[in-house]
Length: 363
Ligand SMILES: [Zn+2]
Image (cartoon, rainbow, N blue to C red; front, side, top):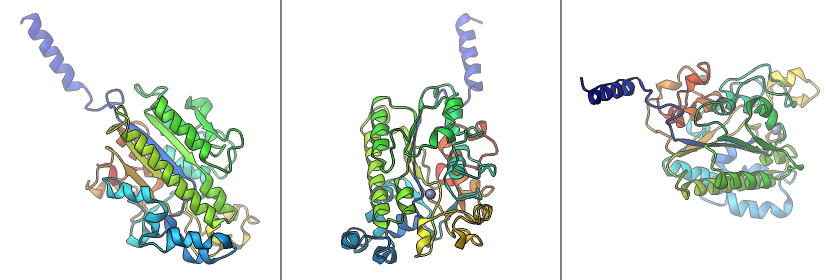
């Protein structure tokens, strides 16, 4: 055999054993955005006319503008968060509209932020996490795992308004830079948005996580029109993120954008919209939200997600979610595997016990 033939044979053998898509060869990218405590009700139904009428929650002088902008319109949800709805119309997906029989929920039994972000980022609920305290996460997020994979090292970056994100992502151990809560960032997401956008434009990290927080803070203080305004601004920021990606030759066509939330809020048209927490949690602290100890804040486990980009593969068989669905419900624990699948990575390498990818990301 000639040397040439031997080389050809050797190369053919190598090709045979090469993995079809590995972290090193995949050139896919990801931007994950979370909007803290945005209810599916506002996203799909738009502002609640009852809460908009209630002077306790909506400032008298602003009622008319809220009504004109977001209530006296043909599609209230799309008027409030136009870009998330556009994602669904332009090849992406928007899921969690319970009025249409869609369902997505958290698996963790707490229904508040740290347990929710842990579930999103690790693909598993962890019942040891029962507070929002600044405790370094014992669990490895998919961001941390990616940051150790070839082709991703130093390519994973996080921004957040809430100052607990460095603990959730465990910046010390993970080596993932988490720019969060600096300089009393609350009460606005504007700095988070500006810094994240700057980094996306300049450094183009392969994986970018952005945690927006105004919606939850403004809901807790019972300011409905400002909660709505924060959701509207966040939607516009996500549009800017997507336009930036689409205008950049390095990122265009290779980046999947996923948007979701850490928890829902109370579902009744009363004061429960300002709150969220499970029965299990309220039983642990019976003095907190004492009127709801026996029930929890009903509906605050309901969530939603949106996605667009090459990782979204609609029309795939739905069978793959069965093992992880709670009833017929998609779960928050499926986001991590969905994100990794969008990056062209076998999520089982991260954690075979993580929730399976959502069916919108292919089999
Ligand atoms: Zn909250």
